[in-house]
Length: 177
Image (cartoon, rainbow, N blue to C red; front, side, top):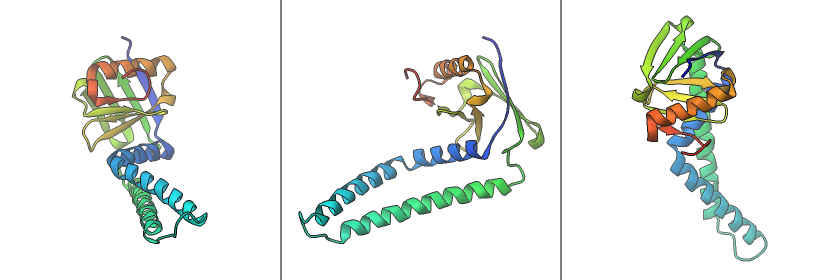
């Protein structure tokens, strides 16, 4: 395998996508319940509007409560993003250089004095999104690798290599799992 080198900058959009993806994973069950309740609430309210039954305010109240919870969840995520942007070691907009081979991933962010190498099989997990690879060193340490910094064949190779090295700790919607 050839070594893949990618030089790039993380944008606010990249960071926001990673944040919201993590949020959706963390609250996956709650969000599923919320969407089910919203759907039932919508049908219930429409049917009551057309006179199929009397509108009981409990269902719309629960729907509104879930919508408020969702807004608070998004507000907390945006607050976290804003806090990260103010942090002195924030990596958004800084030059990143990532080197990947069959067994290792090497991350460099000179402005933040990051120069570290990890064995791929020791990573906590990797998620492949449409435009990003989210490389979790641990459940708290995340590196974002935008696909725009890679050629198409490199993205495919990384997908297959992560799949082979990480097994169930690699998650993708592309290709066979």
